[in-house]
Amino acid sequence: MVELAWLIPVLPMLAAAWIGVVYVIAGNRGEALEKSTSRIAIAAATLSLLLILVIDLLALVRGAPGQIAFGSWLSSGVYEIRISFTLDTLGLSMATLVALLSLLTLRFSVNYMHREDGFQRFFMILSLFMGAMLLLVMAGSAMLTFIGWELAGVSSYLLIAYAFDRPTATANATRAFVTNRIGDASFIIAIVLSLFWLGSVEWPDILACGGVLETLKVGLILSCFLLAALVKSAQVPFAPWIARALEGPTPSSAIFYGALMVHAGVYLIIRLAPLFELIPELMLLLAVLGAITALYGLLAGLVQTDTKSALIFSTTGQVGLMFLECGLGWFSFAAWHLAAHAAWRAYQFLSAPGLMHLMGRSNRPVPRWLQHRRWLYTASLQRFWLDNIANWLLIKPVRYLARDIQSFDQQVVNRLVGLPGSASAVSSLAQWEQFKVGEAGRVVGDSGDVGRGRGVAGRLMEGVAVLLQWFEEHLVLKGGDEGIFNLIQRLGRNLEKVELLLSQPRYLFLLILITFIVIL
Image 1 (spheres, helix red, strand yellow):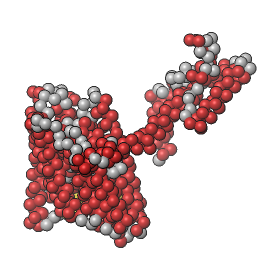
Image 2 (cartoon, one colour):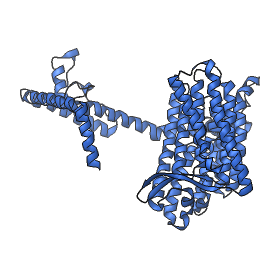
Image 3 (cartoon, one colour):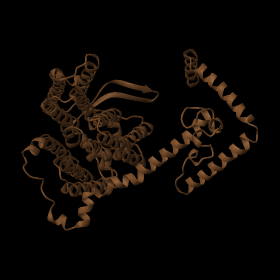
Image 4 (spheres, rainbow, N blue to C red):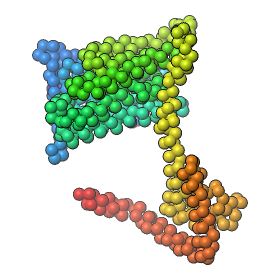
């Protein structure tokens, strides 16, 4: 049965693929076909759980199988990435928890999502998520773990944006997805460093690097994994994204952010426990960030007015306590805490809709001790301005940069290459010809033709652009009797002919062939 362990994450993924293919080809839509969709998803989840339980029983009798390799996936020179699973106590326990909670959530969703327009889409993504989480906790290498890590993130994004016709849902999904890309990039760096310094990404090899590599190199690898864990588990300062993730349906909120995906970072830290124990500085950082996140979740949760928000901040606080426990060296206790919290929080999220229908009053009031401390109450209500800080430090500068790049693209690049847009031909010279007759009462020298700058540097560049535009208009064109303009026009027509020629299939194929020859 251990040799069939690879089927455990594959079965839910196959169910997701089947639902998606039938949806596209056979039009598996509507209430009449809900049963077939839910049955295939639940059947795959049940088979995965049964396989895990059988392996668990064998592990109780014979001991945990440990590291199992099913073959080589990629091989290049001295580097080899194998398809392997780590079926130790931690891996089997987490896989059992994931399979059980996923199956219960799928069964709950049959009635909860009944007659929803996206019923098939929901079950497809939830099955994909189950397979991703099983791969994440069972993977025998950092590379396979990362694949599960990414698939779980994509599933999360798709279900946050389940109501894709609502701008709020799509905006929150994008915010959560982009925030998690920070952790994903850090995870990739950790994989690359492991390959360079160890020549392997297998978890046993990484855990044994303490006696092979220098402390600094071990610390760098661990720091990258730690950043990935902090983002995935929504720890301060990355905590705000998880509150935005509640835009999805309640079952997805329960399984993603209450029970399973939010604990992926804690699982990664526990998996790397032997290495963290070698570096006290990172243990201290774990403890400090965990304590801050626990306090943040407690205070922000006390001022929430709806049940799901209160639950998600409570989840953030509990996961922060798990990081604190890991920082104190209580990794086994953190694992037990993870399992108990995942089961309990899944139950709370799934029962929240029924609870809200039964309640005849508003949520509990804010504690008096918090009401009398207005500054703390305001900070808690504003979630300690973490979103505002992120907007100020990251989002606004990126937006300004994107706006400036777009302006540069329209004002310079488009004019140089003759693309449609703000420029109508080869260059700004051609635009001058278009408007020289005074079309719409406008001339090229108008300030509207020059991108607006921001700040001292932007204003300076704007002044230089206006000066160069005036020079081009009055000295180059008019002074040269438009001879230069005619020359550029002819050059533009010739370039267009070359472009049309190169766009033909035979020349395009030739260019691709030449590119491959150069690369090889």
